[in-house]
Image (cartoon, rainbow, N blue to C red; front, side, top):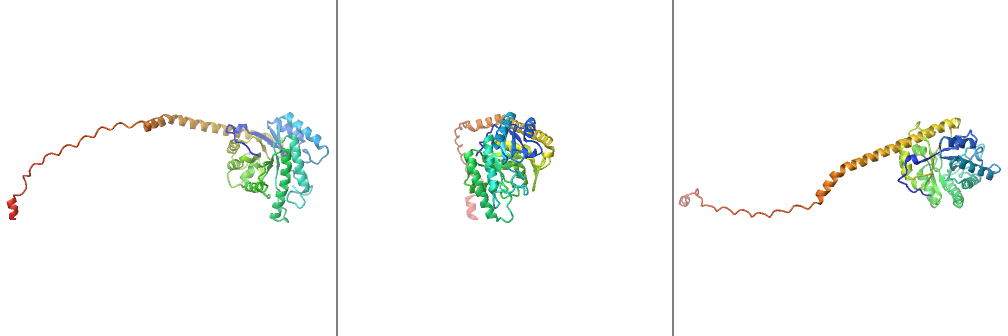
Length: 352
């Protein structure tokens, strides 16, 4: 999938969402209502045992009900697949596509794609997983490519974009790894990227806004949170190291129109308050960046207007024809030389 840059997009035009993994203690209906009431325009829906369990009975009926609820609340949606213990009650995130038997993970991702299609989701997001210690790196990579190819086929058939997320500590943890994986899959059209803004600060070598612009063409899903360099911990805005106004400017300059969803999975104990603070922060950052950009543009325009007369005068001087040269005056005739009177007498000279 590609995103066409829209130079008219402003940071204040960005669509902010919130992740339901930050509302784990709420019923899904209640979580969606709180998110909408706070003014978010979308939701990153993590399929989990209490939030649209993809393995529970009557899935089609429940998906239809969620679709109606989203429509009533005016919320866009992306599907997230990072539930911790949905597939294995003993082991976090297991099995992944890297395990000896990834069958349950593959089936989960296929179901996520179907649910995404039925909900009209903007993207389905997933990641590689942590390499199990007994699995050699080369074998893990081959398993990942094979598993992703299966998911790509399902997404292509359903017409749903995939957002593969580089995750610190996993087999694919950065943008370079995502590019390598996409190339190994044959650069499929539906294989986009989910970019977590915090992860960019955590481990990417380039500044966060540069990360955004680097993947703008393939950006289908954005998660946003604060973070510190080298520490994979999702933080509330203003408690980490990220300068957010330039990040929002980069998203606008990239022409990104998908959801920018707050990703705070460890803050469910205070979800409504955290979500309220988060959207206030993001709106203020967007306004600040839009205002600063407008002021800078106005200064540039004023400077250009002030310099215009001088430039016009210089241009006119450069284009004006050179004045005609006056005819050269003839050089004055040399004055006649009179016979010298101070030469020694010739006869005296001879005598010397």
